[in-house]
Length: 340
Image 1: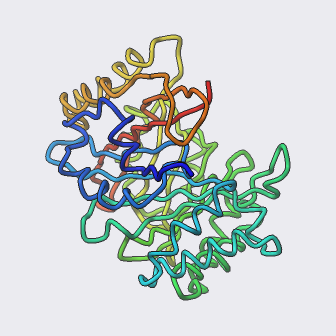
Image 2: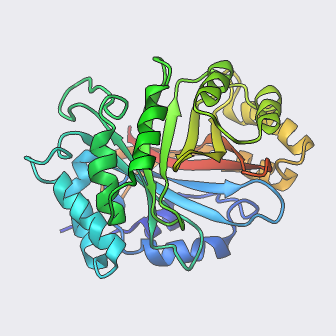
């Protein structure tokens, strides 16, 4: 039997070049204590979420568990069921493993996000991707056409209570208003937050179609901040994050990977980050740390018998407009591996 090898060991052995300016060691310690209980073989990579402003040391940590690893996930989750949130999550994972349950062949993956807050670090935010049939070679996205599987089964199971009718009605209406070209990439339950508002992650917008959609759903956020952001700092709208209560909440997150080009990744990201530094949305030290993160290596992982390519990438930036119009910038630094 192969010796147990944890995500914490993976961080120590293979994450290399973790920039202290972006991801302070003191911010990593609570995660490492928690992640030593998680087997690295259930994930193909992980992501650090870090704030780019000055005096913003919080780091969040996330990873994706896909359909083939669902059985191992049940084993991992079981020791935590004394916590009521984990007990409910464990029930959902068991349903995911039951061939006759609606979630079994539709739930494609679960993103686990752990906020860098020592008090709540063991309670994850969860984002779910679903398809019509996991066994299909070309599965069709599900959530836009069948959101009730999430809002009437997954979300109430995780929160311990049914979604309020007024919120459910608002969510359905917002989904009905989506343009044909926009898909729901993930539906989320942010269990680590104080309020369990459903979160939608949407992909396929252009800047203009995003503005039009937000007008249709009566978004009450800061339009001036949104227009400034879209005109000055966002070349591509890759994903949009909205939270929904009885109305659409005024905060919004917009993710961007920037325009692809023939430039080396380090040069491409330098060009993307330079105006953010000039406008005070990213410190020079953190911009430098992001560039130092980029890289690749070849080697073997203790739980794989084949040689692997291991990549350190900047996955995307996220611009968050708060309810008061304040703008925060985040970077998502990812490590992932693929067979050579």
